[in-house]
Amino acid sequence: MFDDFFLISFVPILTGLFSALSCTLVGNILVLRKQAMLSDTISHVVLPGIVISFLIFGNLGSHFMLVGAAIAGLTAVGTIAVLRTYTSMDNSAAMATTLSVFFAAGVLMIELTAGGNVHLDVEHALYGNLESLIWIDGESLMSVFDSVSRQTIPVELTRAIIGFVLIASVMFVYWRFLIVSTFDHTFAEISGVPVGVVSAGVALAATNAAVISFDAVGSIIVIAMFVCPPAAARVLTHSLRDQVWLSLLFSSLSAVLGYAVAGYVPILLGFETSISAAGTIATLSGVILAGAIFYGKRQRSYDFLDGHQT
Image 1: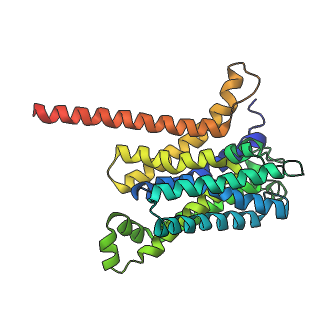
Image 2: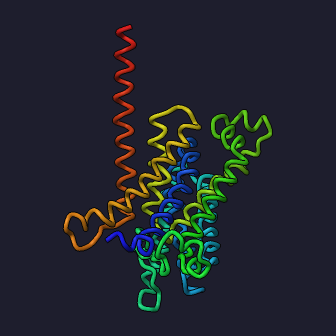
Image 3: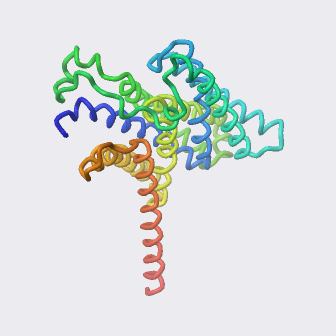
């Protein structure tokens, strides 16, 4: 069962890992800004852009798919801003409206083209195709150093790694702007921080993370990784630095252990097939969040009792 690890599981695990890390990095800022709903919105509204690009270029590996999805994501962000400005909707209502309309449009596009040669479906949009990312020439770790073998590595892995490096680099360079504009909006404006540009950059980073992850892992993992690891880390620490590192640890555990549980545990238990990797990874991230809440609440209870005893 483990003989074909590099052929079957190596690429999916790494793709899920880097996709999760990208979403979690941006998710820390969204959680601190109380904009977690934005991650849910963006992860769904990119669907029409992906479908249109797929219909035009015929495959999900095209870089034009990223452009189409990014345009859809940015259009949705603009739509939210328009709804908030010209209607009585609050932020949550504007996001919910945009999410439902854009995602429904994407679903309709998929259904209308279902009779043709389109291989994209609603289940793909929700769960991705993580299990199908097979490395044809993956025989061992040494295959990474073989130029011929590297050519058969699914593009989703390359895309996930590049996306993570890009997001991490940009956040590292502009970290002070991000933090100042997040915790003290007024002070940031007085200090000359381009608050509007920073907010647009956060939305663009969230769109980028969702787009590079969407095809491989689907919207379920994207939403879970945006919210659950940062929220779990936030419960356990008030240090922003510790929160970021803890959240990355939690998302890594969810991605790697979630895929292993989905792929291998059912077979070890005697079942003939594995279960959904996307569903298992998202569920495990929720379990980690629940555990963090329970542990944090228990620690606060002990601290309260110790304070009264002293």
